[in-house]
Image 1: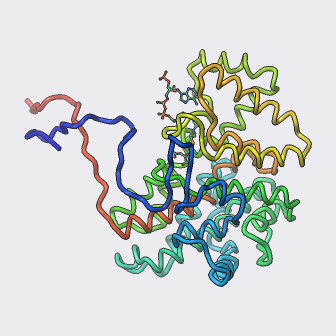
Image 2: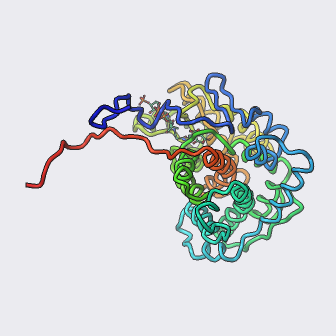
Image 3: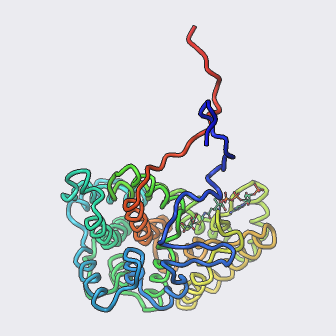
Length: 380
Ligand SMILES: CC(=O)SCCNC(=O)CCNC(=O)[C@H](O)C(C)(C)COP(=O)(O)OP(=O)(O)OC[C@H]1O[C@@H](n2cnc3c(N)ncnc32)[C@H](O)[C@@H]1OP(=O)(O)O
Ligand SMILES: O=C([O-])CC(=O)C(=O)O
């Protein structure tokens, strides 16, 4: 509502905090019960009983796949896993000083630019084409992330294997071998937990871009830009820097005291919606514990617990999903600046589900602003 001068009468909610912008049938975040459901299924149950491929299917189609549907889905995903020459050439042109999030954002942009099905405005939002584009992006992102990780280590590209699951192949393409099942499972759990989280900042960005009837790749590219920031997905990388800065468990309290005195935000803690703990953390922490046992790194868990305890007793602010994911990706063997691209590889499923939902019942997203500049004046 506005008054006659066009000034909004309603209260301004900085950061849109608490504002309900639309409906969604994709996931439900409930801070009261600390729960998260994808299409009605509790995320913990999906992490325990499903693969990332099944969860991607669920997010896009609204139901878990039958055996036949899963087979067709996997066959297509496995057929799209290679990194095509054009995208590889563009990645090769990028300096190693470029952040891996800039590389992944550029690669998605290139894939969009060469998609010959984008012929006119109708094809940009065609539902069947968008479904196919979503699955293709999901299939190609591991190749992009793995190749970028390898080129930073001066290693050759590893070709995909079509006899492996999504997560086993992702790790194979990154490290040149299929790791132990414990590692593949922990990684798969992280992909499932990162896949979707309602109207978070990057998803909302994707929906805003889609609402102009722009194409899916533009929306995903914009979402990657939003995810890069340390208040959102960039926090999983930042968590690792924090843990390295703290060093050892016995230093956690003193480190935190100084950081808070300097008014620093502690990465991996706090959340806009959950104020009493992130629903995904217990499941990801359990996955981290399996990695800690596998790699015999009790020091990592001691440090993790010590900082969490210090933050709880000092500020009563709980960890979010990025807190256990950061050290998990470190133990798996990824470089720290590759952590947020891993989040992209997973969240592309949620983003594209929202892009398709937005396109199916679209309204241009365009809020109002209350003008706070100088009063009308004239050039004398
Ligand atoms: C997957 C994800 O994207 S999860 C989020 C990942 N991001 C991070 O981990 C970054 C660190 N966390 C934060 O910066 C914040 O908690 C956010 C951005 C995630 C949420 O922020 P908001 O909902 O805006 O919370 P808000 O800023 O209102 O916090 C309330 C109070 O808690 C404090 N607070 C919140 N999080 C933190 C933190 N991580 N460290 C220190 N203080 C914090 C705020 O400073 C504020 O204190 P004040 O009332 O004295 O000013
Ligand atoms: O919901 C949010 O604001 C951030 C988050 O946890 C996510 O995107 O997974």
